[in-house]
Amino acid sequence: MTARRTILVIDDDSAMRDSLAFLLDVNGFSVATFETATDFLDRFARHAVDCVISDIRMPGMSGLELVRKLKADAIACPVILMTGHGDVALAVEAMKAGAIDFIEKPFEDETLLRAIREALQPQSTTPADGAVRRDAETRLADLSPRERDVLRGLVAGKINKMIAHDLGISPRTVEVYRANLMAKTNVRSMSELMRIAIAAGL
Image (cartoon, rainbow, N blue to C red):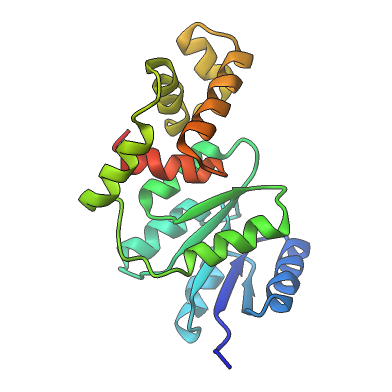
């Protein structure tokens, strides 16, 4: 029997903590929960940890600040951030800072479980590696100039209306371009698209 992987959950919403703890427990993970990032950091050393799931907006230290703190302390642990609808800009910043993924609330249970399974895979490469960059550039090679403009706007954390204003097109047209981006790069989530764009140096 293999050892249960340990997932640490940080969220100031007690109902969310309890819900995630239950979901992870029934799916075979060992779970510890924390109300704040500071609470997590104070007790972090006592826990063997395989993955951290954190809300991005919390009282005190945010999820983005937590990612930066872990990186500064050279603590190599995959972090998945949970974001609200308007927090994509923060999530992109967090991915640039070292977060491995983000998922937007509300999310399906399977979306989170898939993100965790992918985060627990051995990370043999980083976005700085040449092979990863070449692969990312290949996946973006078929994008039109306008699709690249939209992608740059997304990487900058802009919402559809802002991108539309910048490019002189309608928000509905931006939505069409976003759908094209997802299809052409063969990704299932915005975070996966952002990871490719960041790896390609956009």
